[in-house]
Amino acid sequence: MSKQLVLMDHDGGVDDYLATMLLMTMDNIQPLGIVVTAADCYAQPAVSATRKILDLMGFDHIPVAESKVRGINPFPYLYRRDSFVVDHLPILNQQETITTPLVTEPGEDFTVKVLESVHEPVTIMATGPLTNIATALQKAPDIEANIRQIVWMGGALNVPGNIEKNWQPGQDGSAEWNAYWDPISVGRVWDTQIEIIMCPLDITNNVPVTSEIVQQMGKQRNYPISDLAGQCYALVISQDYYFWDVLATAYLAHPEFFRLKKVETEIITEGRSQGRIKIVPGGRKVFVMDKVDKEAFYNYILQQWRR
Image 1 (tube, rainbow, N blue to C red):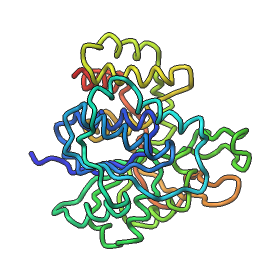
Image 2 (image 1 turned 90 degrees about the vertical axis):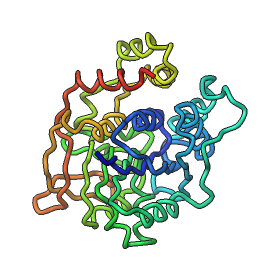
Image 3 (image 1 turned 135 degrees about the horizontal axis):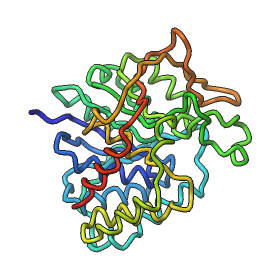
């Protein structure tokens, strides 16, 4: 069976690194590269941490690129500083040099280059904003034909968003962060014919990061990847934290864990509701992860990180 070609596009939050780790464990996937966008992170430590993770996992042939795109509504610095913490975890600093290659061109140009060079369509696994993808499509519209689908952790349909209104007084709390960072780019991707599979807050709210599962990771400390996962989640266990990006990424290996529903949507790009994705009759058709086998998902990630 031929492997599924995947280009990962993440934005350096704690769960983005964990989604990267999960992706690298999938036997059915051929990763083509990773693009890091400075949204839920600071660029330098996020790129560095990503490369160190690939080194640790033995995937030091996978290129990493730093996107130069910027959003409209910045993430709070309290979120972004986690990228420095992860980059300094001792388990990621056991060798003096990083061998995973850092691409010289910006991530948006690397995205174009990868998609222009393939002989079969590529899945883009997006666990951050869609800005890098939208910019690549603007630069080279023909690459749309080489995108099989975009699997995106983003949006909130029938539940509140996750924007802290006291930190973002210009937003009414209806949007999810990956959409809110740059709603205009979400709109540009929505204007394409690319198949989109959304993993919104509606489903991720059902898979919290609990003390129990972090402790189970800790019991697997003789496995470096599980140890790293447990350390990362320990950083955020005091917050209301969920398996956002990890859940979305798990779809690539086990779509049978999920129920998909086709809905018609639109993205609000301005005003107090900017970043909100609404269900609207006649709107842009997308597939939405509607339900997940929670027990199967939890068991799967524990199994995959046992290495």
